[in-house]
Structure formats: C-alpha cells, structure tokens
Image (cartoon, rainbow over all chains, first blue to last red; front, side, top):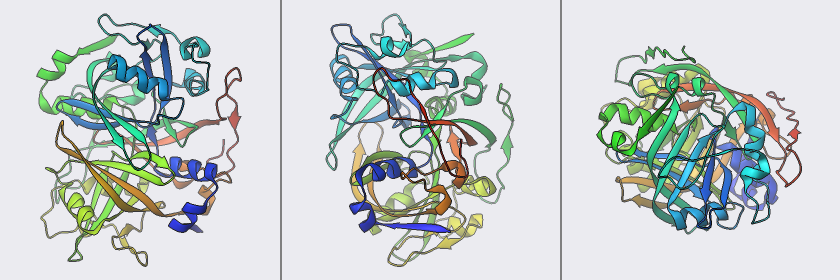
Length: 219
Length: 219
C-alpha cells in the first residue's frame, strides 16, 4: 500500500509532523559536528546534517544554517573568524553529538556540556573533536542567503584533512567503513552503513563492474 | 596512524585522486535518481548525491548541478519545464542507477538504456521511476549560480510525495529501513544502512533517550 501526499496536504499539515516528514523524505544525510570558537576564545559545537559536496577543484563544500536556531552561534563564529571544523561522528559517542543540539546557556560550551574533547591544530583557530577519526578544517569563502526561508548557505574551502591511514585507499577514496562514520536520517535517527560495492566509472554499453576495496571495510 | 593532508597538498594533487578524496571525505550522502523530460517529450534520468534539506515550511530542498557534465540535460530540462522527480534507490537496481551516469547519445533516454521504467502522475510532466519505492515531485523555485566553480544550485519545493504506508511513522518520520533506501559515499560506493536508534529532542541536562520506531525497521 502506497501513501500519496499532495502539495495542499503539505501546506495544511501540523508543523512538527511536516518538519519530521520533510527532514526524512530526502534519504540518508551526511552527519558531522561543526566546531567553532568566538573571538573571546569560547568554543561551540553543533550537530549538522546539511553538509554537501560542491566541487573538488578548489575543494569546496556547503552547509545550510538556520539563523534563528541553536545554529546561530555557529554562524556568528564562522562569519567572525572565517574558520570552522567538520568532524565525523561514530557509534561510541553519537548520543553526545545529538546532545549538542540542546539549548545550552550562551556562556556554556557544548564541549564541556557533552564531555567531548577539544583538539587544536597549529595555525587553525577553532577546535576539532578529539573523539572523531575524520577531521576537516574549513575556511569560509562565501555566504549565500536563501530568500525563500531565511536560511544561510555557507560555502567553504577544505584546507586541512586528517584521517586514519588505513581508511585512505590508493585512489584517494575514503573508506567510511574503516572510519566507522555514521549517517543520519530526519532530525534524530542515527545509522551505521554497510557497503554493497564500489562500481566502476559508468560507460555506455558496458555493464557496471565492481571495484575491489582493500581497506578494513573491503568488499 | 593518522594521515594529515594540507591545503598545499590538496592544490597540487593529481586531479582524479583529489576528486575521489573530496567527494568521499564528507561522509555518507543522500542517493537518488532525478527524472526530467524535455519539451519534445524525451526523458532523462541521472544519479545524484547532492540533495540537501533546505526547510520544511515551505518544504524546500536543494541540488547541485555541474553544467559542463552529463548533468547538463537535467539542468536544461528543469529550467525549461520547471519540474523534476526525485526517486530513492534500492539494492535490487542500484547498478542501473549508477549506469545513468554514462554519456549516452543525446537522443537516447537513460530509462531505455538502463531498463528502468517510466511512471507518470496525472498533472505532473516528468517521469518517476516505477522501481523506486519513494517518489518526490519537485517544482523549480530558484537558480543560484555558485561563482567559485561554475556549479548551479537548484532550489525546489516538494509538491508531491508517495511512499509505502508501512514506512510512514505516526509522527511523520520516514523509516528508510522500511523503504530499503540506499546511501552513497564518494562517486561510486553504495551502502545499505542499519539504525542504531532515534534519539529524543535534545534538552540541557537530560541525557538523550531513544525513541521506539514501530515500522519494519523498528529498533
């Protein structure tokens, strides 16, 4: 049995129901916690599921921020210091990652509140999460305001990457099975993932062949 | 052992290696195939991993398109007809989804080339993929040009949703375990996912509790 939902139904839907539906209908999402630090040195940590790939040359990514939410400190700090950290989330501390979304008082860092550990890289201002196996240092490049709903897209360049050696394949592929990175659906559902296969570059009239993966998550 | 990659190394990296690294470093991504149809009635189908949530009221999503790639027909058709379909991908046909990325001749539809089936909804111009269990009808709202690398962000409103009844939870949450939707990492690695848990709305000083999921993927 299939359920059909029309535009008219979406418009009159109870607000929280619609938020839950629309947040989860798009499928699995990238999961990370974003670390920032204001000019007074206070740190902030926030869970995000809106990271997307923008291009490899230069290495660019985007995130979406709601300025009226707990994300506001993240936005303020990025705009003022022009740097932030992206940290993958793992099974042994995903509850702490989720907890960073709570509305803590302005003077309280989510690092202290959730028990996660600040880690600093020489020459880079905001903190990474020591418990994370994949660290990305990001430099602010552009702010794009989305006029339809007041959200803000931040475009940033990847200026630093740290990851476990056994997760980096000979062709540059990052084996997320080896890093144990999680994915999220909706606002609150956390998942591990299992590889079916990597497929070779698609060419007309050639059936897609599997590429061997030699890392910890090999298959 | 950890590998550190600097901005200088990223800039001088071999091009395909960098593309593979940067496409996969951000974690798991939403996976879908996007259906479009030009004004002459010819259909097009393309695999995408750049879908992201923009907001629930109105229900908005974004996708990133490279105008110089096989995505070009998708962009042309969206701009000319202002509609497209988003279809989740499942284990029994993910190889066909991947194969839509091949450079087929302009007159050949990826539906015919890959054996996937067009399905039409009354009053909606482009085709859905019959083999997909989750259909989203999207209406073009805005084009945003990303000046850093020539990519294009399309902002669209969700105007129709169809999904299996047993995948829609009482609070509006879509259980992707019940739909059997896949996730992708990098350009070519396809994955199933397994829920750890849903977590309750985060509040300061309250440890995150699990929410029961009553669907097929319940846990």
